[in-house]
Amino acid sequence: MRLSSIRLAGFKSFVDPTTIVLDSNLSAVVGPNGCGKSNVIDAVRWVTGESSARQLRGEALEDVIFNGSRARKPVGRASVELKFDNSEGTLGGEYGAFSEISIKRELARDGGSRYFINGAKSRRRDVIDLFLGTGLGGRSNYAVIEQGAVNRLIEARPEEMRQVLEEAAGISKYKERRRETENR
Ligand code: ATP
Ligand code: MG
Image (cartoon, protein in one colour):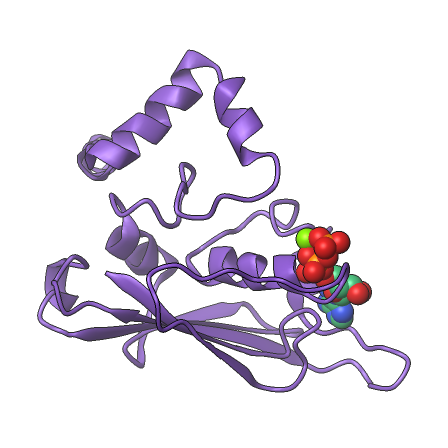
């Protein structure tokens, strides 16, 4: 599975629809301070189900919506869409047969957020489920390594370290299923 594009609209500083195409296995986001590099990373976290405003460097969830600048009025909604090349079938379940998988999240100021998988309205937990065990999304997201992440890992408590290892080993998926079954 490989992230092949990120499309943002109304998300943080990306007010106009912007598509970032990633056509290599290794991509770098570079640019001057404040140009929006971290906002791109926030977008990836957000669309894969991040529900903590603080993790997205805001105070409220609607802080991800473009809130205006000197030249532009605020907008009413934010959306982010990720496209994954799934030709190796890593993203499994009912979407395993698709060679391209699209995940989209939208948020309007006056409403809740909506998720879509390949255009079909889905629940947040469907998106979380899709990525469990891939290293992207969820609590032990190690596919996104931002400033301070390496230090946090070095200083992690054994229980936190274990979560990262379980995600890498693909065990977290089964633990989550067991938790759900036990809570039923
Ligand atoms: P650095 O190199 O300092 O880490 P960066 O490239 O990571 O910078 P970001 O943190 O991604 O920069 O972007 C910061 C910019 O995004 C700021 O100018 C901030 O005003 C703008 N921004 C953040 N949220 C919103 C929002 N909801 N609406 C409009 N602009 C926003
Ligand atoms: Mg930054």
